[in-house]
Length: 124
Image 1: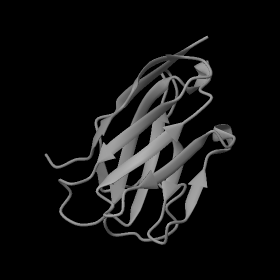
Image 2: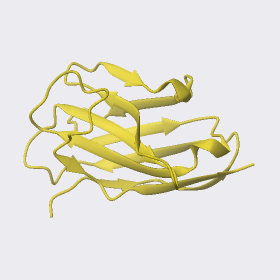
Image 3: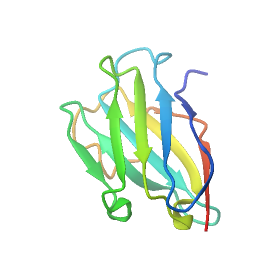
Image 4: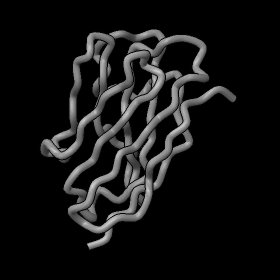
């Protein structure tokens, strides 16, 4: 099964930082839309940030300027830099890639490829 591979999750204290990575090298082509989602226990999956083919980014309101999404030059790795983490950021984080849609990446859940997720736990 071809899918993105997330890494970089872990357990941290409130106020600390983590950088999540998502390997995209196994995908059959360069992705146009890229995004990070998260899902906390008992809650629905929600969008965290998206990156479109022109480099435009969109962030969920709850990121409050603390998170930053980016790729490497070849778009083979997607990153999510998370600073000033809060206990409410605790969730499984997933990256998603779409090889067919180039814009309007935010607010979509119909991505071609999903990773298995990486757990982020923030304690107070």
